[in-house]
Image (cartoon, rainbow, N blue to C red):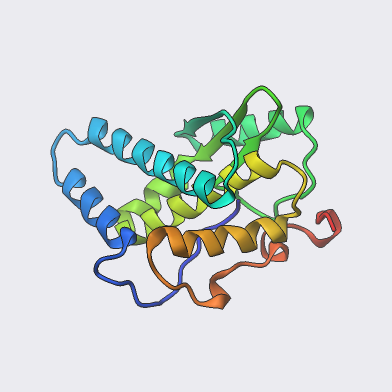
Length: 187
């Protein structure tokens, strides 16, 4: 999934987005927050997995989550993974994550450097985008190449709004052509 989504919309005070953001804010106030932060991002991932599994009413695939801290390392792994996978879309720019899927194991790689910069600016935007990224890549693990990128994006933002307990404006759902070159989009 490419780029970061930013928009203005009302966030209910009792939404999961608000609750997760407040939880993260408390963690970030600590001087030694690394362990708690790691637990937070793992917990959010597991919550997203459980939500997608329940929504799809399907057996959950085995998914391994890998955070890549440095941009150069992420780009190296992403490039190397393209040699071993069938990638239908070619990103227009920097990506935040991708999934390598197989019958045995699915691995989601996250580009954590741009997400960290985002976290330093706004915790709610960070939580929103991390949950969107998780759900999007989890859906790729479920569907592999059955759904095209636009179908996956549509379902991602439908599930994301429900998961976070808020109504997302229709224009929040990105178009695959915003992220990928037209000649490489699978139709």
